[in-house]
Image (tube, rainbow, N blue to C red; front, side, top):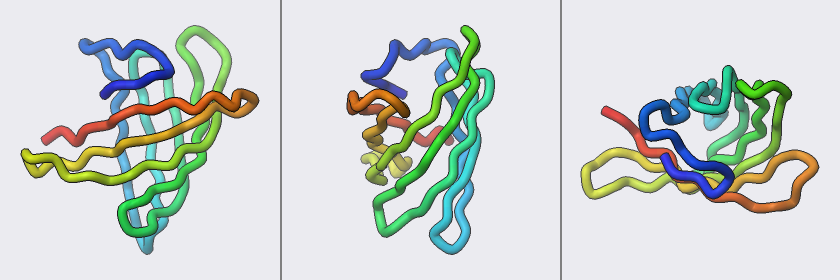
Length: 101
């Protein structure tokens, strides 16, 4: 994973689990800066739109919205190219999440 919002710890990257039914997506995540996070949203073709909230290991919480484009890499694994912002901050960030086999 890579992100413009923060440095990604290669030894403990944020890991996401996604589920989908009837074009509704939801999931959870945890990682180097997040103790636990949840998201919910929708998928329309190769576009995923979600709202998220998480607790930070340093204390406090964060939430926001994102829009992702689903891509398939040369290796056949999925990749999400995500543009996101935090509530209260209009700065647009980009992250790339890659499926692990």
